[in-house]
Length: 452
Ligand SMILES: NC(=O)c1ccc[n+]([C@@H]2O[C@H](COP(=O)([O-])OP(=O)(O)OC[C@H]3O[C@@H](n4cnc5c(N)ncnc54)[C@H](O)[C@@H]3O)[C@@H](O)[C@H]2O)c1
Image (cartoon, rainbow, N blue to C red; front, side, top):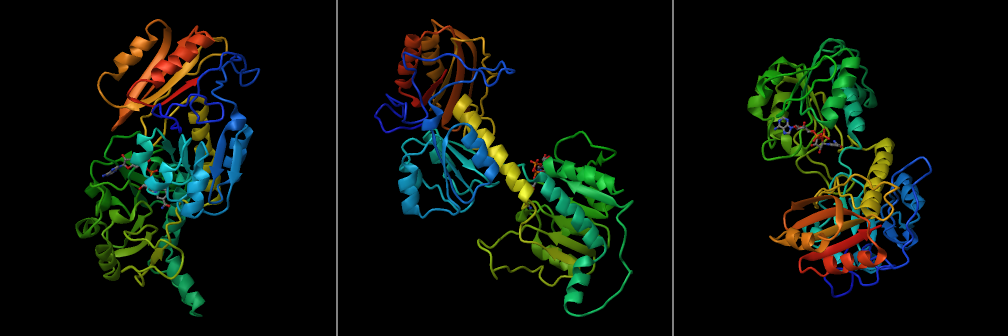
């Protein structure tokens, strides 16, 4: 965690400074999380000194979780103006944001003690991830908390499309009574083709089978099918056998326009396409053509290549007015439950990083974890060392730790930075001070923390 002083980010007196910590001579060395738990509670600092700023009305689950740790948590319902943010960020150790707060280099440069950022959402584009990493600031998000919400929406859309419910609903709102059964179907016994069998695709597979559907899927990696679903050999095969095709792939070079005219032509006449993944995955003009020609029986689209930045009358698409076409404003994951899950998931990641140094799930930072120090390992410490990823660093660290008993150690790198965690046993408070001093004075140091 960068600090104000000149030793390349390492604070000399960290008690109420950055998250980085040296060990005072009178280190108190006891305390398990609870009587039934033998995992040692690491004491990197006085938790009441840790200041956390939560913006944009972050879910109560996160506020409670962080306060329960004893941290000072300040909350705001809205994003702050850049000037106010720059002032506020100066003194805090951790910030939680959603999509409206832009943590640019300019804003992050003002942060003197910031060690970790929580994006309580899926995307992390609003943060200068590279600059944050250079400063040793880990960024966490919550990519999978809303999988269930998306899967449920898709189930609903399968039924709605199959019964042309969108069109009937619109007609009724215009006073038109149009009772038809032609081309309206039950979904029982129909084939659902899932493209991308990850968190959402696999969850959907289970729900669809419960509705009596036959599930087939295509993925770039071989995966264990759930229930009686089956993986097929190619996307083309899936398109040809499915009554409903639903897309759940990430946005990559390979998935850009993965469903275009050629693929739509491969789909059965009268079949349906659902896209709640990313807008770039489907070639929209080709889809509009397939819908208007009647080759497809309908489509449900939640994501678009260009999405309005704010709510209001800003949406434009060639899909507007296409028959039996459900258009939704990227709400696949937008539920109260997902928000609550996001609050829990991200706050847990922040707590683990602050208290234990664990960086698993960080988007801009090497992912490192170590098995917990046990309560009986009284004189053990954990060294967390974020450093520049250049040759020779591990040799320096090994030299510093050579006289000590390193119980376990793990190191990984990502781009220009690397992160090492090492648990060292049987060290005296004086030795802790010495280890901290020598590691934090290495020329490649970005942030050194000692948890004890
Ligand atoms: N509409 C929404 O509000 C909403 C909400 C959450 C997620 N999403 C989007 O849904 C998509 C899926 O999310 P997830 O959490 O299930 O992701 P995931 O990473 O768990 O699963 C993606 C799967 O796609 C597979 N895959 C990757 N490239 C592929 C290719 N070229 N062909 C076939 N399969 C491929 C992967 O192997 C993986 O199994 C993502 O694009 C995500 O951004 C949308």
